Image 1 (cartoon, rainbow, N blue to C red):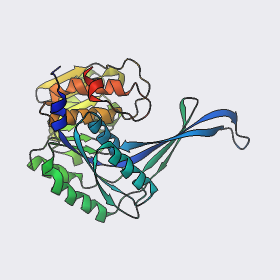
Image 2: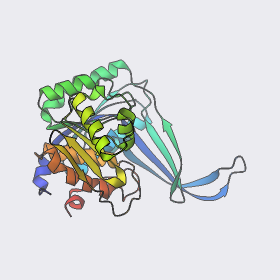
Image 3: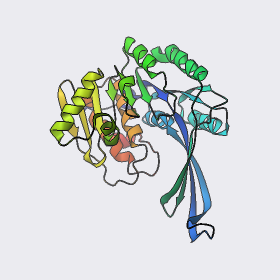
Image 4: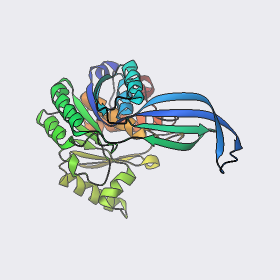
Length: 310
């Protein structure tokens, strides 16, 4: 792998755009079953809030030591203010457009006996006026950054992603996308797209062999005018497809404890290293290593520069 220096990483400036959310965890003990229904009764003993969605992508970037900005739309509710405080405490520079009618996305997970018992989601879609703010702000701050990540969670915050990709490409900025849904035409012209296996199958169908996968991936890459398609494959590692062909790297996780947010770590690491001057193929082994480290941690987590290079 190409060597990395802390100075390289510190100079990297990445703009993350997408759906932010608050990951709230309630931990407790389970001693009995409810008399009202056949479900466990959880006595909550600890509460924890973490950055989720594109905010977790941004957190992964700043944890490595890079300069990260976060552009998103949120509500004007308790969740949004909690998010903003958490973001500010990390050193991420937030650009939040507020929509009073929007319910800021929160995912509440109840944990008992070291396992997730239930998840409750709170969310709705942003208004067009707030999205117009986001597009305008994107144009204003794009020039200050060396790479852009679009983190799509399908919550409506990237309804105008096509315009922003075009603008970034015009300014010569690498564009990395963590995709969502079955229509990838909205990501046309991006530099790198990072679907996982299930996400790619929604778009190209199920493949029958590695040769079939290669053909389908390269066809999609060409149709969308992408430089690189990076397929994350959990325990099978990652496969990169570009104009030169393909590269496969094996998984590095010693023990898989929780895959939550691993994709966030991979794309954040890629973007930071590309903003530092590395080519995608040179950044790939480092991104793979970062993903392997983070799945050994519980919940949405991140990787430090020291962990990455150790």
